[in-house]
Length: 492
Image (cartoon, rainbow, N blue to C red; front, side, top):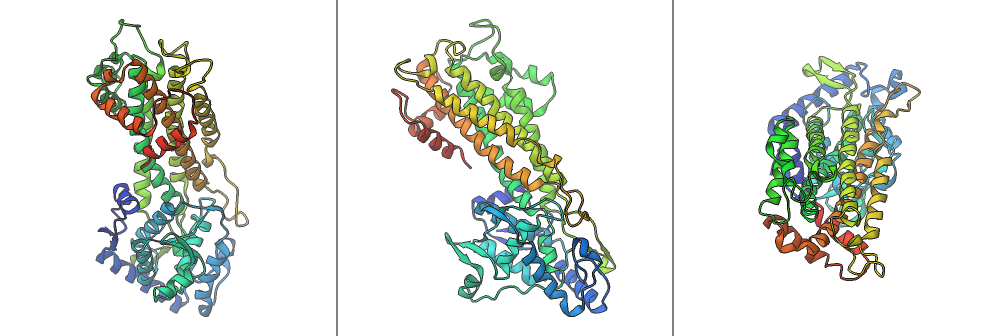
């Protein structure tokens, strides 16, 4: 059981909630903060103090005062009007992550929402009730308004959810569970949708998948390194200590662990003096991607525990401030940075694939690793597919955060596009995993030609696992199934 309090939620805990179905509960002190904050909102309504989002319109309508008897209707209209998402729904994991993150943010006690609403969100997580949320439509500032509005539709009985593998109307589900839909009151709609939880939810899943991919890239690269009779001297700790990047040294150390005991690796001068960069510079290239992952993790964990709605209520209601914590620029930058890091892992993987299959570069291996070159093409088109995927990644890697289109009659005149960046990062990760799967297939085949009994003990274990999924290429066959199977094997 993981206790949410608005301040200490980590990516590791999110991983447990998302992938291990760990249940959550609410911290008692956080509940008290929520109740106190809600009392402040109700006091503001009674006293008819003018406070943005409580008794005013939104965006360009912020100067329009709303009568006391209409403040609840204001919140309902807000959700309905903002539920303009389009496109395919977010994966169920992203939807689940969005609920957890929004719940955690609201527990900070700056938002003025009722505890009843948070307990409904809690129930949704623990009972695996996941809103259907279209992926497209967020500008990534003023919060992820459209995606979060679709999340709220589920709470109020006007949206759809996934429950036990079926897509159902939330109103029907609440009835089946002997619950009533939540009726939003003053500020609650705004508190629920002003936030960066769509981009951050997708970002956390991106990070979890990217971290595993980066680790997998090292044993896959090790198999290639052995198959190419790579020169181990380049991974000597003195080389990497001389530069000073911690992540670079760590990759070199892990590579040496994978390669320990190999009878295929070589020393300087035995076969050649230097390897190509895609082999020799694995610690430098992969290490730089690990630096990006560290940056991304830090920013995501800060945002996971951030109050990102507007306005925020401080000092028992004596201080209510309209600010801009909903602006997604920090996560937009992090996602664009992540795109580069993972695209590069795929880029260098494709270059290693080329070396494995190209008879001019592969140190005596059969051309295209074919058992009968000419009659059969072997791994020739595997490299084509990898090249296509890395080229697609280059277009997806264009930073979304450099774009901005004004909205709400220029009141909201700069936006982050962070959710687009997060979605594109996810696509890059999926493509990169396929590229690394292709490298694994080629490296395994190449190692078979070299003599897989000469592999290091650790890489030999991986070779055996890959062979159970993707048999040796003794003759040409449909390889898309092998790619798919190895890609599934590499998933979190």
